Image (cartoon, rainbow, N blue to C red; front, side, top):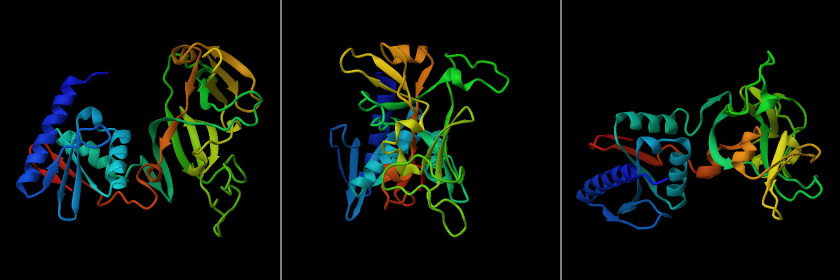
Amino acid sequence: MPDPLGDAARRRLTEAAASRLAARGYDVTRPGTRAEPPAVAVRDEERFGIEPLTDADATPTTVASRLGHALERDRRALFVVTDDGVASAVRSLLTDPPLLVDEADGRRTFHEGPDRIPVDTGSIPGAARGYACVRVDDLDGPDGVSRGSDADPTFRWRETDTPAGPVPSVGGVDAASTGPDGRPSVPRLVCEVDDRVVAVLGGVESLRTPPAGAFPYVYRRDPADKRFRVRRGDDGTVVETASGFAAMRAAGFVPVPMPLVPEHVVGPAAGVEGAWELVVGDGAEDG
């Protein structure tokens, strides 16, 4: 949706940062394309992509994608924010721990990303490609009270050591191996919806088109009639046909969001620390 007030704030933040950097001897350019940040500053070997962030922009997805974009182009990201509140939110995303909800004993809890989970439907006759989903009505509480199809479920992706033994994974991932301490060599990646486990995968690499059977349901738009077919993940039985996302959601089926995995966004060799600086709109800096 159009965001004229937000766009105006981003322009002001960009110009304020660009002016300060130009006064310090940086060569500031404005690429003028959505494929690049609104301004880039270069001085000798130092290169910044100027990334203005309003309160609405201070999300894990936006911050991680802009940092990854800068790293891909051998630049640091200079985040320019509106006030100390936004600065605190961005700083927390980048340091506490970097781009993760939590990390303990080598196991991580991830932020929810914007993408869907593509699944391998090769085991389901007549179903080419698809995406993972869950049925809200299947997530009734332990007292048997229905959540209702209008309720928005809360997804959580985290790494853990259980269950033991093989779990669904993609080719090239040895999900059954263990280390000298008995822990799985590949952490189990658990998807919980409202604290109920709905899927387990062999590590974050298995997010790259996992088998359909790893999830309760999968859906796809049929190319012939343009309607969504929702199938059981284990046997491919069609359980719902819907005209679009709204109708699918009204029937109680919700797509599973892809977790935001740092190494998938910023690259396996790229470190978050030292890859960014933070500037508040009034000029105060916090790197």
